[in-house]
Image (cartoon, rainbow, N blue to C red; front, side, top):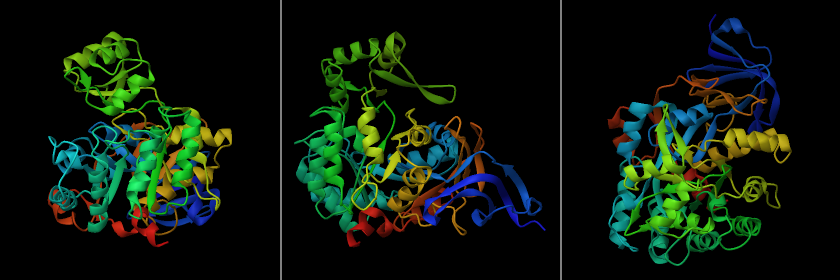
Length: 466
């Protein structure tokens, strides 16, 4: 008699790929969705969960995170099911899944500077080629360039993008080179450096903070340069705070992003300026407490910064809400979103608010429920080439995020048919890695379950031929 492992009863199913927005039941077996219909027989299920009054979305795919241990719990609690980590080495990804894992699907990129930490502003062609192939062999989907923090020359940056395209691995860019910054000019330069090559431009909102012009003007300019670029993937987030580093060398913050934040706040771009910003409550220090990462400032924040000898994560309230809303909702002449996805750039940075803030946009009328599902699930799945995710059709992976429409927060998370979070309590464990054919051997040796992504189907490559 038992046909289903799990049955979700009576939720409002929102599935834009299949043009569904109605109250239905969803049946799951062996990690897949096997039936979506009204009034399915509960006697056929091992486990039944009543989600009446809740909204059932395809599992949220966060296309830009920084997991770092406790981020697993923080993301699962916020309704994330699949996370794309931007910058961790394979050793950290594997270790964190084994120690902190909450059942998430995890893909990752490797920061190219992790291979050459002492490199200056340029890399040789041989160094670039070796880094790209090594990242892929180790299990990463590809490479992340942290131009905004420690930039390369435009020539080296363009060569990294070109080499990733030549080898067929993923490439993402926090924009900025030695000729531009982490700003709207850097975004425009990034589009030009990509040319016809595929490229993922990270957190577009970060370049619309008013460093060059009014944030709204910058957002509109960003949209004009991204519109119609089918070889470019992009995302933006909806949190007020950013994420950067507090490390100072010779009296100056190492990260150019940190220096930009100080300049925006009217502080000197120095050790003393950063110290004053923390004391004034403008700069927040990220510390672990209660099994999560929290923000502290003032005298307490300064204490942690000094104890860490400045080498600790910081956040500043520098993201303009109006620019963020424009970037999250803008469409092109064909009715497609210009910025593909709503991300968080979160994980262990406490800004995992994509579901909550996205639902507020729905309440405001800036997005429909179906459009929110596109931004949180369907478009991210297309961006990453995940054909069995991002929708709730029969045969899809049973990755599901259930949302409470009153609180606007995630109520339940289901990954591959297993409940990993319910009503804010994280119950999942372990994890699942998404790698490419190049990294399969390395990931298989870790003992962590995995599946293979066809990188040619990601937007940055598939989009070039469309």
